[in-house]
Image 1 (cartoon, helix red, strand yellow):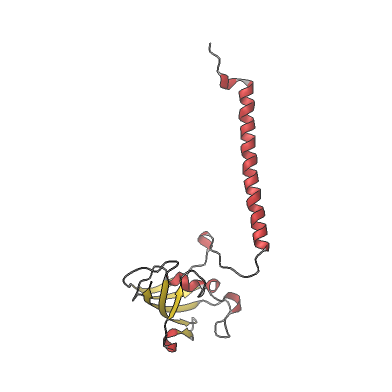
Image 2 (cartoon, helix red, strand yellow; image 1 turned 30 degrees about the vertical axis):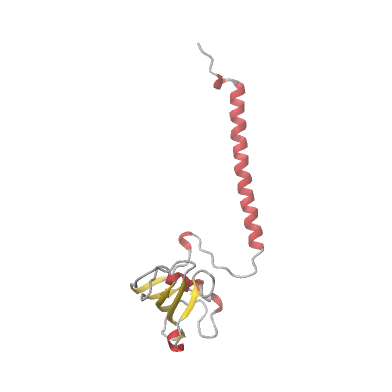
Amino acid sequence: MRHDPSQSPASASARATSRASGRAAWRAVWCAALLFGMFAAVGCDRAVSVKVGPRAPKIKVLSETEGVGVAVSTGRTVTAHYVATTPDGDVILSTRDAGEPMRWIVGEGGVIAGMDDAVMGMRAGGRRRVEIPPELHWGRAGYGGKVPPNSPLIFEIEVMLVK
């Protein structure tokens, strides 16, 4: 009969020690993540838009006409006309009325978060009509007496240029 070294008491002890140290390492990782999260939350002094899985607020695309050329993505410069209205149809903001399209770099905070989301994937000449939830614009505060608190907004967007 041959002796199997993996069945020795010393071997069993080494396996148990290895499992225990592995569990301790995972516990340390979880504790570090928890502490980091607590300290990060304490350091926040302004509202931020955070998207977490399927619960993240999303825009609703109500209608769309395809454009041509390069698609809008983070870091691209977009030039677009838009008209923002309340669900009742009251115009809040309009680049068309101002006679000048708006230009911004997607993802750099130059516009409300919902506007960046709304133009993602659009191309020059494309049009979209979207509903932006309050979490992606001015939310509970509303805006200048024109945007009611906690109200969705309807944006009609036409992308003129993507760079």
